[in-house]
Image (cartoon, rainbow, N blue to C red):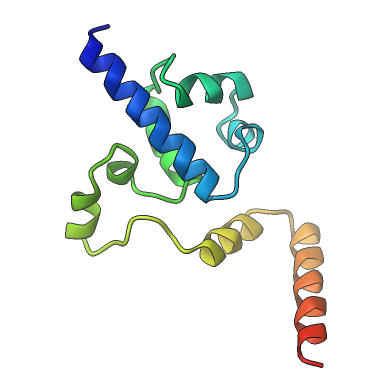
Length: 120
């Protein structure tokens, strides 16, 4: 691997780590979504290992960004009229929507309880 390639994968890993933190995800949580180990996520984030091309779509989806943005091309997403990252509440709603129905009902009950308390 050339030095330029090493630098690229280190920068990509830093970007992935920042986006993961922005999502409020741990390495373990991201690893579970991607069906890989936490150690593999850590290796990607520090640039020790290359992120496979076949994983980019799933990784971008897990981080709620377009692949272009994940790869560092903010201008491509902006040109399509997209903002890049999805607001936190929308990301949480997507994650809640992916839960089993019983867990979705539990989360909704919790939200309704908090909102009811706030409305007093």
